[in-house]
Image (tube, rainbow, N blue to C red):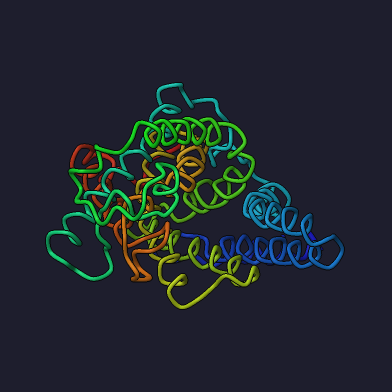
Length: 319
C-alpha cells in the first residue's frame, strides 16, 4: 500500500506557484480517513462516554499523523521543515502565544460595543454586565437589567475573583493539557500545510488553510450532531480569520508550539465575552461570533502594519 502511494506521489503535478497538489491531496485524504474512520470506529467499539473522548482525540491528531505518513513514509523526506520541535521556541514566544488571546477577548468586547451598542448593527450583540443568568445567581440579586459597558467595572468582587481564577486556569490549561489536542491539529495545518502552501503568499496560503481547517472542524461537528446552518457559517468564518495571525506566530516563533498554545488558550477563553454580550442573533450568541472574527482581523491588520517585512518575505520564512 505504501509503495502504491509513493508511486502516486512521485508522478506529481505542480501549480505555477510550484505547490505540490498531489502531496497536499494525499495529506487531506489520509487525515480524513484516519480522523473520520477513527471517530466512527470508536463510536462502534467503545461505550458512549469513552467513545466520544477517544473519537475526538483520534480526529484531532489525524492531521499530524497524516503529515508524518506522507512526509516520512511516502516521500521519505525530513519533517524538520514543519516546525514540530521546540528547538527555536523561546519563553518569550510562549508568553506571547498564551497572552495574545486576552487581547482578542478585549477587542471582541470593543467591537461588539461599537457595532452593537453604538451603531446597532445586527449580528454583533450588545455589551452588558448581567447578560448571563449565572452572574445574577452568584451575586444573589434579581434581574438587574441591562447595564452599559462602563458599568461592567462595577461588578461585585466575587465576579472578578471568579473571572481571574478562570483566566489563570485557562492559561495553565493552554500551556499544558490543552496541547494534547492542539498540537495534533497544528502539526498538520500550521506545520505541514502551511509550508506546502507557502508559495501562494500570506493571503493565498492562509485563505486555503483557513477554509480547509474550517471544513475539517465542521465535519467533526456534523459527526457529533452539532452542525447547523449558522454554526457552519461561524465555524468557517472563525477558522479562516484566525489562520492569519496563527501563521505569523508559527513562523516568527519557528515552531508549531506557538499557534498550538495560542488556540489552546483562546478557545476556552472565548467563554468570557459571552458573559458580557447579550444577543439572540446566531452570529453573536456563540463563542465563534462575528465580533470575535472582527477582533481577530484587527489583530491581523496590526501585525501587517507593525511587521510589513513578514508579508513581503512570507514565501521565504522557515522554521
